[in-house]
Image (cartoon, rainbow, N blue to C red; front, side, top):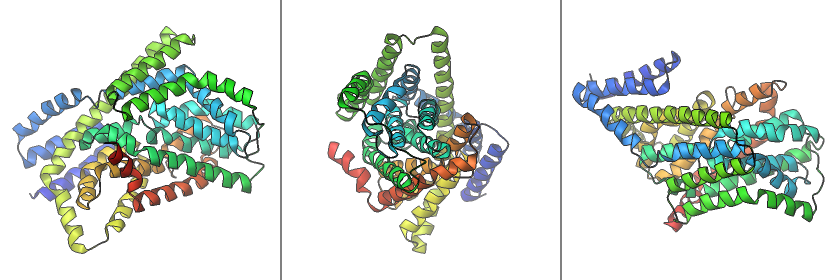
Length: 433
């Protein structure tokens, strides 16, 4: 049996196992090991597991994940998300649509200490949604703003999904974090534009708030100074080469824990619950990375990516057209799977094509994350929207999607800019090397 047929059968088997609700990590391990055994031999396949487990467990980049997860858990329990929201509201809350802009700003700030989209949604909905309703904002616009703001948890470093991409592609995670700065800021700016447009067209649904005087702003800034300092130290230290990403994660987790204790919010039972939750999430991610690594080896020995690249080159199809097709596929998958599953399933096939087209791996990593975040808010099964609908049971899912429409338009603009101008991603990492 030819390697390409084995690869095709393996991919079909993977989706069948997913449909049968086999955990993705186990499904990738089974398909990867069996396919590798067919193409190379049983003994190399059995040795593959031991090598991959040792490689993942010993990876310093993977050690970042539990530390940043701890930082996000401690920061949320310490109330830092509410501080960031109040800080943003003090400066832009008096604009028309300003409270929605403050929500986006708060999501961006909390994303900088969390690194997770769903965690950002779950935290900010408790902080921002009641306040927006009290100020007269339309419920569906409030919910849509929070769902979209949650995606910034993946775009603003420290992003867990970027760590996984770095591990699987052997890319420097710091380069990815630096490359995400401009696209992340661009996302916030474009979301502000969407809010401004919506507020002008629907002024009743996004009213102005009261203006904070400078005394009130200084008070809020002083109360928020600690968390802003933490974000600056952690991210600035990484970007400035003062310490590694792993050291930054450890410092961030320690500082967030200090906030939790010094604010009098430490509770032994809640602390244990957070530790168990982080351990469970970390174990799941480690298993998925091991499974993806085994599956990657199977795809590599099948030589399917090289065959695809050769076929595309011979067909003279424009590279941008192929990329557009791949990105459309990512949006569809992102609406069905979570961000980790979407990346792990597709990366073995897509990355060799992108590199073969002459594009940079860091650029594709950021574009990959952007398009996955779009999938998280796309109908019919955008996970951010479903999570939000579960937390806000009085708002219909279709209403939340209606509130997301202007933001989706801005996401398409951002994606087009990154495709047409790769330097938006690659210039800053190249400058800071």
